Image 1 (cartoon, rainbow, N blue to C red):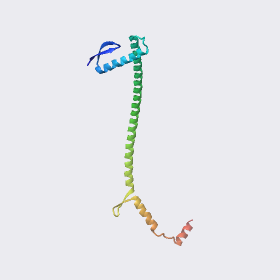
Image 2: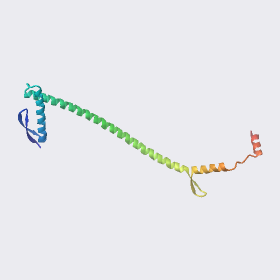
Image 3: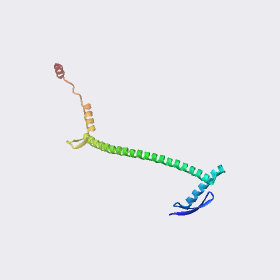
Image 4: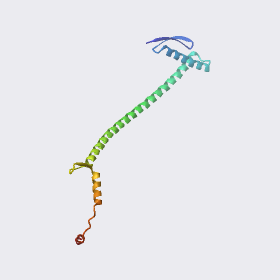
Length: 160
């Protein structure tokens, strides 16, 4: 929607047509008048045209610098987005590898459980292999040692 706004610039009245709100257009006119007043107060022998041209140069300088800053920011944002994309790919790869490793750990735990669980068929008791070995070692430690007979010792020396 177009708005027609009456403003005064450098002492002259203008009817401006804009798609912006009237309040915005009035604020722009006030800022332009403020800047032109600053320029003319610094050098009183300037004409309105000279002040307007100098004001236009200042505004163009600000616009050019602002556009340069915008481009720098866009470039930085693009770099950040690229970095974030690479980080996301690396994270996806790490998550994939993590899932594979978790599955492998689960598989190994299952295999370990199979290898360390023994069923004794004499009484169908399920025992852990470590417990079985511990019982067998204790039994061996606690059983009396059989001493070799003289014949066994002589037989061993004859073999040499």
